[in-house]
Amino acid sequence: MSLRSRMVTTPEEHAQTAREDGPLVATYRTKLLEEIDLAEMSSLAAAERRARLERVLGHIISREGPVLSTSERAQLIRRVVDEALGLGVLEPLLEDASITEIMVNGPDAIFVERAGRVEQLPLRFASTEQLMQTIERIVSTVNRRVDESNPMVDARLPSGERVNVIIPPLSLTGPTLTIRRFPRAYRLTELITLGTLDEQLLLLLSAFVRARFNVIVSGGTGSGKTTLLNALSGLIPDHERIITVEDAAELQLQQAHVIRLETRPANVEGKGQITIRDLVRNSLRMRPDRIIVGEVRGGETLDMLQAMSTGHDGSLATVHSNSAEDALMRLQTLGSMSEVEIPFEALRDQINSAVDVIVQLTRHADGSRRISELAILTSHGREQFQIASISRFRARPISADRVVHGEFEHHPLPRRVAERLYLANEPIPPAFGVADELAPLQLREAR
Image (cartoon, rainbow, N blue to C red; front, side):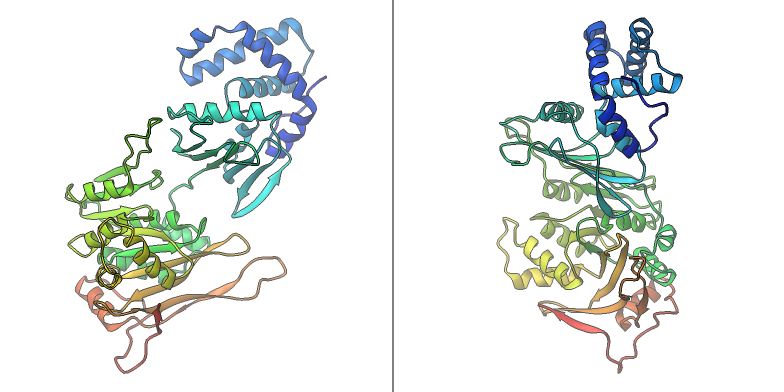
């Protein structure tokens, strides 16, 4: 059996080659493992280890055959070493920059996300055992283990990707692996090109961050919350002390004075866990100018709200929700999950005094991500939540090319917001202007 006379350039081509030449790769992987000294290999750095394996395998092929062209030989060496040292069929997927998420649903089903769309690839693992070996290799890089007594792992790899593993008996479809690759840090100007916002929204959001408004970025899974949060954080002045708190470190701030905090799961004995709430509380003792919370999802919400309303203006956070109204109700629910028993009315007071702006993100049917609404919280004290919509994306019916088109609509700012921007010496973008006190705002209540 021989390899096809070309180099693999895409995961699909890799899949075709893998189906044809799987037995050949398995044979030479066995021969390679028979000839290397595992103890010696473990003492080498990753790059040296790969180079040594490639050299040894080259000698084996020269000695025992088969006769291959230069490209066939290079491809065989690459695939065998990937199986022996790397992540096998996942290696070309990790090298493909267009792939943002890899989802393995058992040995026979591999999906990826590209440009916001999920597709299944014609790839598979040879067996459940091979998939488990790949999973164990991945989690071992972060000093974790996965077995029946510890069937779930959620961790960040040294290279930055976030990995989630769940195996039987919890997963009925077999070992399941999800690898999320974090996008590079985009600037707000680049997000205009992607259609996430327009120039007028960019100017207003920039003014809000510089004027130290507290901003909540809301949206569903995969809507671009972290990407926007990272872009907004780039507007914070360099001289300010910024503390980021995340479950898995994704933010890539460029300022000089940044402290990055990341949670820690419990060890195999169930001890040593450090939660987001622990880190938020500790960050308040670190003299921050601004606190950025990657995502609030529990009792830490109350601590974050208290920080926002007691001297840490200009803080940023994200929350999972499907609308601006839902974001406020979710903050209220999450705040009640604290061990401090606090009435909903008191939580409403905390939110009304802490939150200034809600940026709602939506992921459309074509995979695009946009700011669907920019809202100002106008309620006070223990009043029912009331928000003023100052910008909306009006989507048109999806076109024949399956692309979502539309326009951003902008409305006047509440006078109180305009005055705060004026005192901060921040200009108001002309597309917005200031609402006349007699003219009604785009107000609605959240219940």
